[in-house]
Length: 255
Image (cartoon, rainbow, N blue to C red; front, side, top):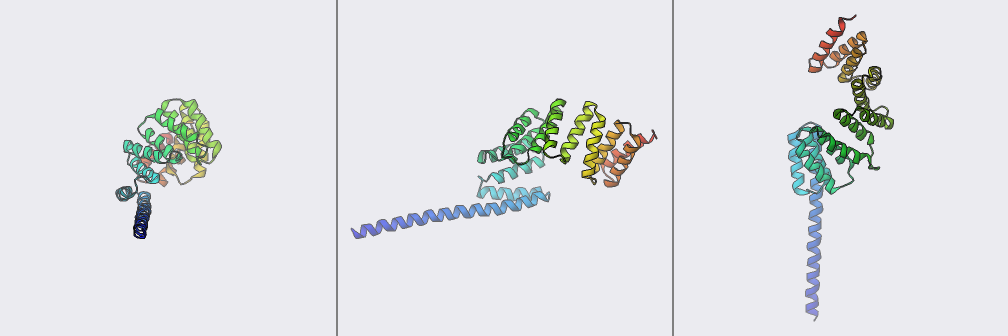
């Protein structure tokens, strides 16, 4: 009887040891996968897509159920404009973490990249309805952009204004709203928004170029010329500088 009891106890100890070992191995794999993922994220920030993908794939073999890893993979493919693959990974991230707002917003961005504006709007609206999402001004601005390309300028304006009501210094919102105002023929308002954006980010060549174009539409040719010249100064020997040189030649005729 004692011998049977000892055998039973021995089996129980072995079972517990095996379970503990399995748990330890799983935790070790998760930690290793996290380290590898973070290395991939560092490569991604550097623009080294090949290095990032290699590390992400290694991490995925160890822990495919990491929603942050699936998001990172989606982001990588989106940056490479491989939007269908990005969508797969963003959706996987949301299956693993349904309240992960960054993946929801990025899923909208991926559909926007495919110019599927209705699907983009669907996901942006889901983000906005998530009270836990910390940066709703991004989603409102993205909605403004989607409605702009759908030709619904009233809704575009409304969403950009909502984004700016949350964060008045949001440069992307100011840029987008200015484009909407230009499309609506409200040029002075476009100029006002771009002037504010340039004050916030004076080193941005693209903002100076946009402001030059708005000044040109407003028939403020000397201001347009100065903005185009600033663009060339900030981004010499670029395609944008070439466009600015053309704009500067055009407006120079009028003063």
